Image (cartoon, rainbow, N blue to C red; front, side, top):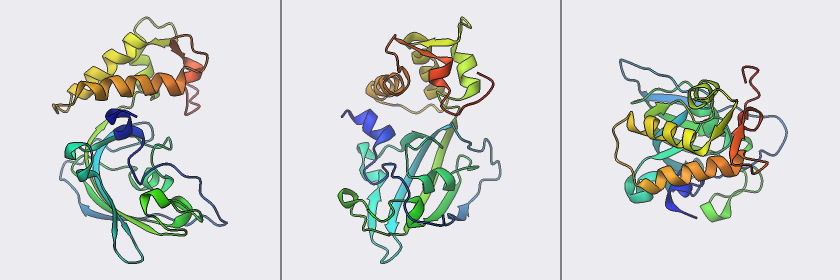
Length: 214
């Protein structure tokens, strides 16, 4: 797996896992730092850039640090679509660039009864994440983005259209990224959305959030 794809979808201890058990518990959010200008705020479908450290609540031991991965670059992922565990999808909603949070996630919204041995997370573990958010961009699969990308208004997205959109979004924060990040994010979008393999992402294939606007 390439570095960029791992960066976006498979950070070591943050693979999406189904919750197990009965009553769903709540994510506890503590705001550690809030910038004076707190905008934009993150929502489902946004493309986020963040650093985070993960700890076991039971003994405080650190099981993950994003700063030790990918030469210390922050992680990119789409919020609210299962690219991280459910508790992080919840805990990072309505968060703005520059904000820092401490998020406590119960087992039912993390790795449940099975745990995640590869990530050194035992069964029924409550997890604590310290998060610093750097950027909130419109995700490549939001309703607004679909209409922006679909330059010819044919209700389907070509590889060229999505590639150009990603370049424009990545350029907005002025950060330097390895070219492979763009290529692998683009390839992953088509892998997960071009279900009929025709080289285009139709409005139906793209509409992972079931919005009526598409």
